[in-house]
Amino acid sequence: MEIIILKDAECVADMGGELVAELLRVSPASVLGLATGGTQLALYRKLVDKHRSGGVSFRQATTFNLDEYLGVTTDNPQSYRAYMQRELFDHVDIDPDRTFLPTCAAGQNPVLVGPDYEKKITAAGGIDLQVLGIGVNGHIGFNEPSSSLNSRTRVKTLTRQTVEDNSRLFDTGEFQPRLAVTMGIATIMDARRILMLATGANKAAAVARMVEGPVTSMCPASILQMHERVTVLLDEAAAESLQNRDYYDWTHQQNESLKARFGRSHDV
Ligand code: PGA
Image (cartoon, rainbow, N blue to C red):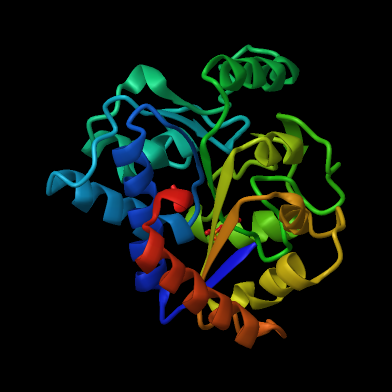
């Protein structure tokens, strides 16, 4: 894992946005795996700004989101489809027919959504770069603790903690889903590159378990230790429980000087 610790959440979004934009500049027809949640809002703002200033085009890109609620229609502002339209898709030049979420249409059997989504990802050639956030409980996508490390896209029940963490986004009395369709852990691990963003002190414990703890289904993000190409962007607060902090900073400095000498080509 490449662990990069930056001053604050703004710098995390800056560097994350630059990594995504750089990939699209080098390979405009890339397949991006996208995430929702509070952390990614700043990343999408950066990408929209870059698009507006001519710094990035999504015209040939394809996107697959990690997850979508079950029982919330896409016209509901709480749906992840609505989030993606609002935060990114409506503001960039992406072809709407190439933006995918694991949405279960009304009347559709939710059990069939996962295998169908997997087929679409495969048909698109697999995911080049998967953007991830991490839950306070160590989840990635909606793969909650105890999810099989070999899981594929399927229906998952959210933990009470995740429901609680997300309740701030729902009005009192509003229906809040307990179920979602999420890419599985093995689906995420198939991505050729992974970009994890985590900010804020409430993520520090989960980040430490992900990076320095044992690989265990009780912290699904810890499986990323087994992926050969993961970049983790953290702000100071999210990095505060890391024991090996000095080494990550030192490594980052070495990588930067390698890049300065040999260019960034190995990095995109
Ligand atoms: P957050 O969610 O960015 O809203 O904290 C991250 C996650 O649960 O994966």
